[in-house]
Amino acid sequence: MIAREITEQVKRLAQQFSAVAIMGPRQSGKTTLARLVFPEYAYVSLEDIDTRLAAHDDPRGFLSHYYDHAVGVIIDEVQEVPALFSYLQGFIDRAFRPGFFILTGSQHFLIHEKITQTLAGRIALLTLLPLTVDELQGAALLPATIEELIIKGFYPRPYVQPVSITAWYQNYIGTYVEKDVRQVLRITDVVLFQRFLKLCAARTGNIINYADLARDADISPNTAKAWISVLEASYVITLLSPYHKNFSKRLIKSPKLYFYDTALACFLLGIKTVDDLVHHPIKGALFETFAIAEMLKYSYNRAELPHCYFWRDVQGHEIDCVLETAFEQVVPIEIKAGKTITAHFYKGLLDWEAITQQEGVSSHIIFGGDEQMRSAHGDVWPWHRIKAMMQQIYKHTF
Image (tube, rainbow, N blue to C red; front, side):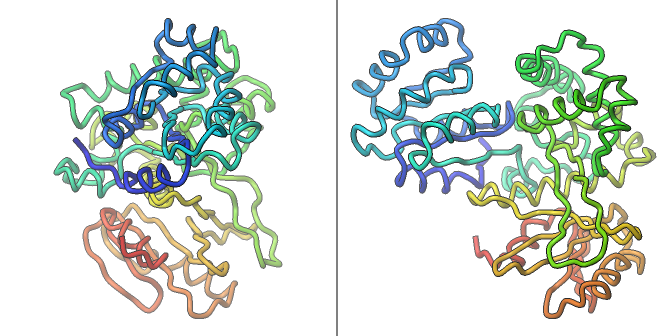
């Protein structure tokens, strides 16, 4: 069993709300987490065809059965029967039963839409992404090198069962990614969509240009935007917005694309070994993808929305990540895959200091080595100490 950092937030919010929704990509551990935290609860999966039909045909009766006879219920993949949300409101409003309904789902857009319409203020929302470096370290499962970690990824299953990484991710794409996206978009050309996925993987860590992506995929720009939106809503990718507050300079306004899991991107790109990764032209982008995902997980695991951006102006000055803290304090972070600290690491931070003229704000560098050091221009953090860096930035003690 791998202990998850979000566990205490699930328990805390279950004492304050009648319903808690745990959202995230398929196979990220939502069901395992819910059943571990609430072992006495009834469990029902709407992935099961008979159960799904019963819930769809008689949603009120379906919910009444558990409301009247169980101490609580975990409803897995709740987005499979959207009609349940309207009926949930009535049960929640009958009486305050803390944490009675625990919902899990892997399609953010469906769940968020229904919650906004019917359950706003009645339900707590949490996002569970795949494992973090610290969770793997705590379970003594962390690979020895960053390269091995990037290739193996962060989904729990390959760490707890003897399974080929290539076979698992091939099955994951066919069983979940394509199924979810095709279910929403009614995509009939599977080969075309697979090509689109590979083109997205090749762009991880880069500013997205919909026209270029559409041209390479041989689809329209509007189709590319629609497919990107569903991949984002299904937690396959995330789009990082540019930071533009309090700047008079002309800035890049398009978002950056990142995969939540580096191994998924590696599989799509045919990267199977450490040697493949070391010699691949987007090794740096994959390392940046890893670091951004770790920072996003840090916020989500604390039931907080990430305030994570990037910054680039039209002259080419760039900061890989900008974190906004309380009182709109802005913290620049550079991400470097190299294992040797050089003067080049600090160039972006020095440009940032000169352009923004910020005072009293610490700067940070995440790199592929194992040393930790402090300099006049920024604290340098090894790849396995990102959580410690985030704790320092946000002054968290947990």
